[in-house]
Image 1 (cartoon, rainbow, N blue to C red):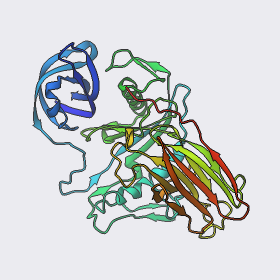
Image 2 (tube, rainbow, N blue to C red):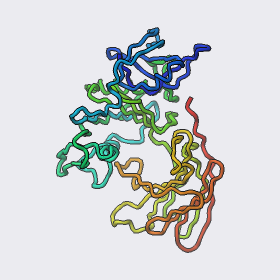
Image 3 (tube, rainbow, N blue to C red):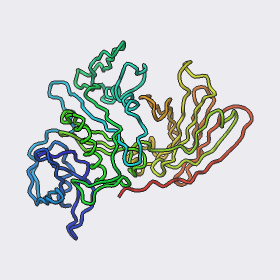
Image 4 (cartoon, rainbow, N blue to C red):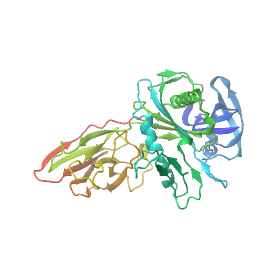
Length: 408
């Protein structure tokens, strides 16, 4: 029996027999997924498990909810893991990405738009960073991509130190959808069914299974695509930046909500004239989904000529919630990023320009925009934005943060 796609495990309370979900693990038995529940006494051992591990299990099987109440287990083999081991030949990275519409909640990205951020095509501009290229960059030079003739453009991104250890090609990394899912339904693994208005394990796996059925109905053999990535539309009440399986045996899942945050304000030459100075109280990114200020410096001459005007994004981060592992380099700092695209743009790289501590100022390359981190006020950062020029006008904005709900 093989562990399949662990992302959490259910822990049973010895005192009253109730369960609280901390982790969920599944067992793959002849292509049938069975949920596992572990007693608290086994959790130190359980947390060492990864997808692809072979187990010998003793426990009670509850057929009604397709769950094994585990009393003890023995790890028989540890093959699988993250699926990135190298046995002398190249690793063929495979995935299928599902773009989902759930009930009346619609995806904010098109199939074509997402593919342009994922893999290269004849239309991919020079210098645009797709996942196909990031796969090489983020593997510290240990990955290479097969050269592919696409029209008049030959794609051959590689690292000098890759030795041909991994391949990531468009034909092996599919993008499907948008796929229309209903507003609710039953669950083969969890009691109570699922609804589009919640984001529990019930919903996450129901959406995954429905997306897989869609692919199978299209004649796609999913056995050849290990990584299953689900792009969730805004409004699903999934308040995480991303959620994923630990390791990857025969398959593994990743859930990514779209439309994570909105701007407190957006400025350009129309509402930020020369000499204007505005001050914002910016909440931490984990405390509100309205948490950044965007400034488009369309009053400048682009450098180099013909490139898009820079878009500056100003945000404040704290080591809480999804950012709890934030290092001191970023914790309680204001981050200034540049991104020269919009939500539908193809894989344009986001670039961090500077992190600011209270009292520090960032000035852009042309010297026409400055951003100053004035002070910390509670859980907010007071930030002043100044477009250089004559005739200073001052505005202070203090939005009421929208508290990000805690997932239970």
